[in-house]
Image 1 (cartoon, protein in one colour):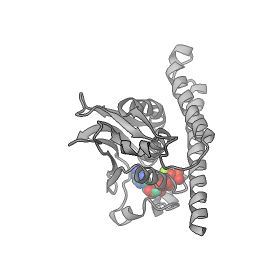
Image 2 (cartoon, helix red, strand yellow):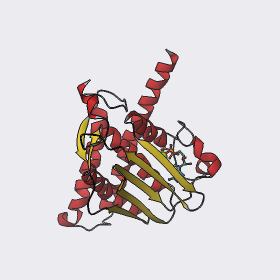
Image 3 (cartoon, helix red, strand yellow):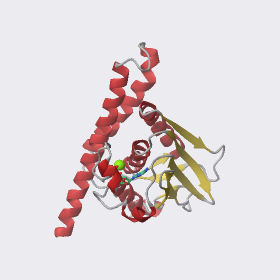
Image 4 (cartoon, protein in one colour):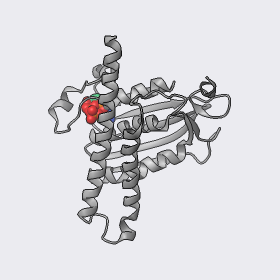
Length: 244
Ligand SMILES: Nc1ncnc2c1ncn2[C@@H]1O[C@H](COP(=O)(O)OP(=O)(O)OP(=O)(O)O)[C@@H](O)[C@H]1O
Ligand SMILES: [Mg+2]
């Protein structure tokens, strides 16, 4: 009983975390537009406005949801194209990376062995990826951030790699614990509650995805998320789940 109420509290804290992240990102881009950083005419700022609208939809999508749950259910399961999905994220976060003097790149393959269709809860998968990309930007002082979509054998792989401060080997096992932050992050001027990676891990686990983290202190961090290939040609959650 206590366990259940704790998990509900975590679900709500996670939801609040992601809704406020979405508003924070929107505010940052809006301020840049007001400052004229991308031009004055409607034509110049239109791509940014489109990104803003999508970010707003993200916030609304989270609030409108009947459940704060990160697990896919029959009601939330869907199919989408990961190539397009990441392209949208890339456009939204490119502006935020630029604001922090970082270069965000999106690297793809020319062809994919089984296409790029993924089955899952797109809102939760978006939350997983946004939290990892936000961290990559937050914990990188200078350099590049890469989002990659690759094939590895039959599986589809999303990589998010940064050239930031890295995570010490002895701290790696803590990063998915809710509310945990590395001591140097607590001392830094980067605010945070230690929720982002807990959310990312919960989404991966609930979707049956594998997540790997490789990090070298002072050099950078790479998150690898593996979407397993399924018999019906789609990656991610098993199609049989839809029949339950
Ligand atoms: N890309 C990264 N590079 C270096 N350290 C990282 C990276 N991602 C996460 N960390 C470390 O892992 C900790 C946990 O990350 P998490 O996203 O859960 O929390 P946060 O970023 O501190 O706060 P929040 O996500 O709640 O705003 C961070 O405080 C940081 O110390
Ligand atoms: Mg974070």
